[in-house]
Image (cartoon, rainbow, N blue to C red; front, side, top):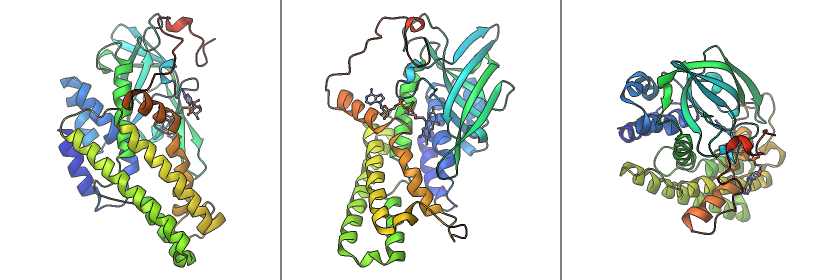
Amino acid sequence: MWHAHDKIWREVKENYPMMESEFVISHGMCLPMMNDHGTDEQKRQFMPDLISGKTLWCQMFSEPGAGSDVASLQTKAELDGDEWIINGQKVWTTLAHKSQFGLCVARNDADQVKHAGLSMFILDMQAPGVEIRPINQINGSHFNEVFFTDLAIPKNWLLGELNTGWKLATAMLMYERVAIGAGGGGGINRPMYDQLHNYATASGAINNPVVRDQMMQVYSMETTKALIAMRTRAEMKAGNTPGPGGSLGKLYGSVIAWRMREIALQIAGMSSVAWVDDDPHGGSAQSLTLRSFASGIAGGTDEIQRNIIGDRVLGLPREPAVDKGVAFRDLKVGTQT
Ligand SMILES: Cc1cc2nc3c(=O)[nH]c(=O)nc-3n(C[C@H](O)[C@H](O)[C@H](O)COP(=O)(O)OP(=O)(O)OC[C@H]3O[C@@H](n4cnc5c(N)ncnc54)[C@H](O)[C@@H]3O)c2cc1C
């Protein structure tokens, strides 16, 4: 059902001002998770407003001691009668300050091994017990850190089965990589190339054959990325959950962003990253260049995508794990001493 919604959404949104980034997490990640793992009651309660965009959702995995190694997370969920009580801290939470709800992975059993005693919960981001503090970004926008102090949620806001948080987190990360790596309007689009074209036209560098050659590289790379995205979306439309191949589009987006930055700097110099107060476009071009640094970190770093492609796509040996068979509470990970 959500595939049909996704198709209609992509088509219709093309006619409106750019709001897509606000919905990458809501529609690209939380909606498919709710669709795949929600109970009928949860779907009835949350999906209509999630689909229509009436409620915005955020995703809470990362913590100060758990980023790439997100299974080291320490936010606690304890059952107390008919409620789960959540305590802990999340960080880098995109759109927490605008969201009504969020999906959060928390540890409900520290006696199990690291990846086992985790579960996923639906949280009310505006309830007492949630404190959201901004973290400013270089382009002037912000994401957040989120603190939970005895946040109480109904027992039936557990998403999926108890102790399946890692499985769900992995599934959600795959959706995230697809949402980031296969974003855009659904056809072939080249936002980085368009940006460079604007710079080069404005500065006259478009007449330089070397610049034109570099721009064609980005044009070709973005075209290839769009084709990978179309293949990924076709696989999802055929009912397949995205696999580790989603990391390919995500990684490639970051590689393109690196290349785009290098070329933008050559063409526009300092004005590729700095703008004056009366810039007619409000610094939107520079903001895109600055924001592109995040593409190699958000949704899993480039190194982690390369590890996933190595282990799970190419079948190379996995990194050694020293935490196998050890209860989480006995591990020295994250901020746990
Ligand atoms: C713009 C932005 C938005 C974000 N939004 C959200 C959000 O909404 N929700 C959320 O939960 N998180 C969010 N994040 C957090 C993001 O998922 C993490 O920053 C990311 O997973 C990396 O974790 P870390 O920052 O703790 O870095 P670390 O894990 O501490 O990594 C530090 C460095 O070590 C490298 N490294 C770590 N482990 C390995 C390894 N095994 N092999 C090779 N290299 C390794 C990394 O590649 C990196 O270069 C966001 C991040 C950004 C930048």
